[in-house]
Image (cartoon, rainbow, N blue to C red; front, side, top):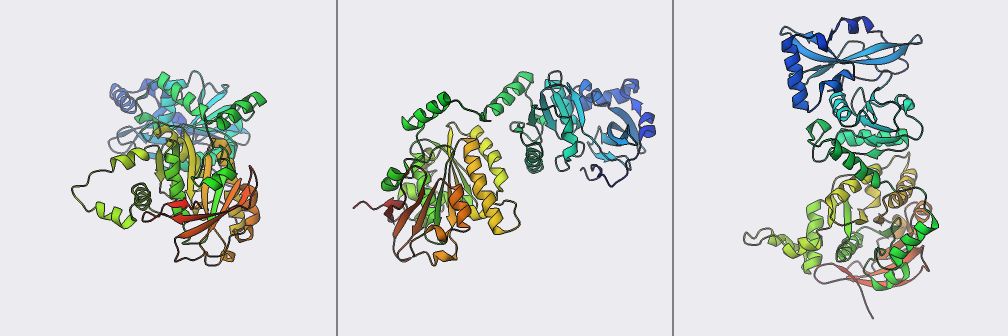
Amino acid sequence: MYEQLRPHEDARPVHDLGVRWQQLAQIENATPEAKRQIEVFCQMKGISLQGLLAQEAKLAFHGRGPDLFLAFPGYARLNGSRVVSAIKYRDVQTGKRKAEAGSSFGEVKVIGDATAMDWFIVEGETDGARLYDLVGHLAAVCILPAGASALRRVWFQRLPRGARVYICLDADEAGEAGSRKLMQILGNGIRVRPPGVKDWCEWQGGRDDFIALVKQERKQIQSALKTFSDLYEDWKQERSGERPGIRVGWGSVDHDLRGVSDGQVLGIAARTAVGKSWALATIAHNVSAANAGGLICSLEMPGPEWFERQWAIFENLPPEEIEKLARMDDVGPPTRFLQRMQYTLLCEKPLQLDDIPYVIQEARQRLDQPLRCVYVDYLGLLSAPGKDPYERTSVVGKGLKELAKQEHVAVIVAMQLSRKGGDGTQPVTLEMMRDSGVIEEAMDFLLGLWRPSLDSKDMLVRVLKNRKGASGRQVKLTFKTPSMQVLEVVA
């Protein structure tokens, strides 16, 4: 849709389209029929005419009809002067967009109060008009000229120092990608999505509703500074059991770890086929018993397969028996199991590290309980930038730690051992970790899993790193028959 509407690069010439812009008609001078069409367009989009006039909108007629278009100017510097360097057109009947030949963009359009300390960034002119109607008298509305996919750092130099930035791009794939890039450019920002719809013109809320939504999203951003009185309250909440650390459900291990606190990361490392995914599912089963909110990022397994395993653990049935239930017409939904997992959500889409905060925000909106734990299966499938595996692992390891602290959650991540781990039957050591130095530094806790014999249902776990106490304890686990739930063997 925005193919022709690209921002100019410094190497490309800027064209002065001022003469063409002056030839276009003012909306207030339009014919009654043109005004009627504009009014219908505004009603359809849920915007006011003032929101368009704030963007200097004019009218253009193209084609044999002729068809009526709204026209919006874009600006850039040419020989030291600010000129109209772009003209965007939008058909009021079809919504089709196009641009004047030679258009390029040197800046973003800002409407509302450009001196305000609250800035709202949107994708296009109609969303800009919608937010202008909602908050334009109180805030600045910044309108991207070429959609969410075309961004330039120089556009945002106008932002006042210390301004609060709300990223209000569309709730779709392009909007999410653009939001991530904006976060990188700006170094901060609060993501605000139109609830339940794709863009703001589809949202039916009013000004009070929007302000409440913004306040809600702002509350998710944790303060960077805490007094020791604040820290005492956090400590008391955890140690008193009001907001306890996450426990994996293996008594001896939990005794040493004393719970994975908000902001901490637990890594579970093993070779392929040892059972780290079953261990992760078992922990999710144990945590769900406390009605704590959980988010499973299943990067390897499809959602239905994870569901089957989780249900098998709950019912203590083999997974193949659970599969048979799907073929029975007279078997209804597993009410007890669904109730047990009602505060746990699963994401089966491939994720980049930068995607997870947005998935967490969505999870918080969906859950009726506070989100306490994020499970990642597994670290090697979590995409991140980097020129080689070591650098990518470094980014992911450090990123998960930052994520846990920023989102105030515990993170439990399954990890693959390097080939030094052999076939999975050797005792796990830190040297077997892929890029072990990076992982050891980033994780608060590390557990190593192995099976003395891959034919055996027995498993051993060793505490390789423990931020809260001693490491080195070795505990015997076993797969519970027949469900494959991982339990500690009590002597």
